[in-house]
Amino acid sequence: MTATTGSTSAVVTRADADGIATLTLDDPKAPVNVMNDAYIESMHAVIDGIERDRDTLRGVIITSAKRSFCAGGDLALLRQADATRADEETARLDAIKHDLRRFETLGLPVVAVLNGSALGGGLELALACHRRIAVDDPRLRVGLPEVGLGLLPGAGGTVRLTRMIGIEAALRVILPAETMDAAAALTLEIIDQIVTDVDAATASARDWISSHPNVVKPWDKRGFRIPGGNGSDPRIADTLPGWIATAHAQAGNLPAPRAAMAAVVEGSLVDADTASQIESRYFVHLSHTEEARNLIDAFFDRQRVSDESEDARADVSAVVDEAVLAEAIAAVRAGADPDVVDRAARCAGWRDGVLKRVDTRALEPSESDWVDAPFADLVDRMLFAPALAASRVQAAEALGDAEVNVASIDAGFPAATGGAARFCQEYSGGAEGFATRAVVLAATYGPRFAPMPSAT
Image (cartoon, rainbow, N blue to C red):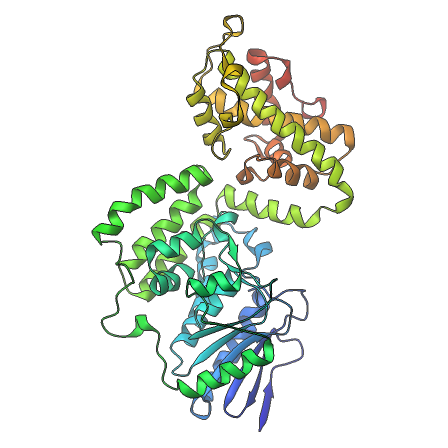
C-alpha cells in the first residue's frame, strides 16, 4: 500500500510504502534545495504528519529529486541579517534545528539517501538522521563550508559532528570549510555507506530500517562521552592554542574560525540541546558581521561572472598580485622590517603574508627611499595599492564590479573584503572615505595611491 501526501508546490513531499515514509526534497521554484522559508514550512508540516502516524510506521528515508541532496542555508536571506532582528533570526534558526531534533528523537530509524552533494545545512540534515548512505558519484561532495562564508555550521553541525568524531576531527572538517568526496567522508565516518546508485541506496536504507527498529543516537544514551574527550580534557586543552594559531595563519584574524572553535569546545562541555543553543548564539552573531556579508556577496559575484570576461579577469588578477608584491617590497626597501610588513599583510587579510616569494636581494633597504611607516599605514597599503590597481584595469576595460571582485579574490585579495571593487565602495565612509584615505596615502607614499577621478 502506498500513500502520498504534500501539495504539488511543497518543498518536501512524503510517500509511504510498506510502513516506510520516504520524504523527497524538491523545491519547485529553485534549481537546488536550500533551507528557505518554503522548506521550513513544508518540512515542519511533514514531520507533524510523521509524528501523528508514528505507530503505523517502521522508519523514514530522506532523499532528493534533484541532482544534489541539499545545498544548505538560504544565503540570500542570510545576506539580509540585521542585528535589530536578532531574536527573530534566532527563532527561525531554532525552528529548523527543532525539526531536525524531532527526526533524531522520533523513535523510528531515519536514513538519509544522498543521491547528490550535501553541503552546509544539507549535511546537517543528514547528520540528524541515524544513517547516511551515499551514491557512488564523483560529483557528489560533502562538507560544511560555512566558515568560508564568515559563518559557522548553524543547524547542529558543530554539535553532532563533535559527538560523532570528536573535537579535533570535527574542527579539521569545519575550519578549512572545504568539501570532500564520499570516500573521504566514509573514512571520517561522516557517512556510513557508499552504494552504486539510488535504487541500491534505497534498498539498503530499507534493509537497515528493518534491522534497526529501535535506533537511538549515542548522545541520547546515558553515559555518553565525546570521542577523544571534551573541552576540559587536558589533551584537548593543550592542543587548543595550536589550533587557534593555525586558524589565524590560514584565515587571518577573522571572527568565524574563532567562533567555530568556541562553539565546538564550549558545546562539548554540555548536553546536546544546550550545545545547540550555544551554536545558535554564535551563528546569529556572525551573520551580522561585515566579513560574513562580504563573503556571501563574493559568493554571489562568482555566480554572476561569465566565461566571456575570463581574459579581463586575468588582467585584474595579474595587476592585483603585482601591486601588493611591489608595495611590500617598496615598504621593506624604505626601511620597514620584512617580518613587520608580512605581519601587516596578514592583518590586512593576505594569507601567509606576501613576501615569501621574494628574493631576499630585492629587499635590500634603500636609504634614499626611507619613509617611517606606521603599522596602520602598512596594513592599508597592502589593500589600497592592489585595489587601486584593479580599479584602473576596471576603468580601462569597462568591467563590472562582480568581475573585479572575483578576479581580485582569485589573486589573493582578502576574500573577507568581498573583493577589490567592494573594498573601495564599502571602506569606512564609502567611496568618499576611500578616496580621502587614498589622498593621505598618496601624499606620504607616492602618486600610485592617487584615487581614480570618479572616486574624488
